[in-house]
Image (tube, rainbow, N blue to C red; front, side, top):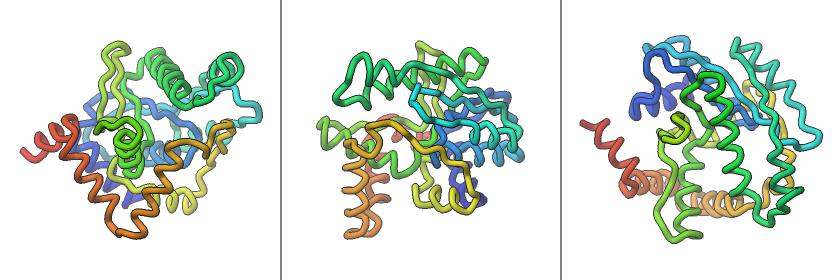
Length: 242
């Protein structure tokens, strides 16, 4: 946890993610990334100079067989309020619209539902579990499949919703999260989505891991290139260096 906290605090400080009195939601999907972010955010809350309130929100997308009770128990152990938001995202994407490529629509619906749930509870910032590998994979997805240099930002303000998205794990490699998940025995809830593991992101992940095996350090070099190429990242980095 100390190792994770070191990288998390660096990102939080570099990009001014947490202000005094912030009310923050963690988007708790039940995967290793969001569980680790929640655990780390709770640990950070104990000593970070800017005091902040923390809650967890889980979206029930309507997948049959999903059991979120381990997440509620985990949040209770951390003394973090837990909210389960029921949605019809599965029905919309798979049953009604029968999307052949469901990931984009599903992601949009999930973002909207999470943002709305946070606003309803007076939470103006949302922590997401995107890590170092996610940053690079998203960058490559954009380059290869869209022909443009693009990626999410460390901090994203959504005007329409008046919500700010935070990604405090941008410096944390996925391997570190996997290691902590096992060591801490986190209650990972298996994703029962029919499209899980069969996406363009899975293809990019495998490609990137192969590149890393053949050219050690390529992930970090891509990350450095990304920070220099994207205006949002470049601006934040320049401000931090000054």
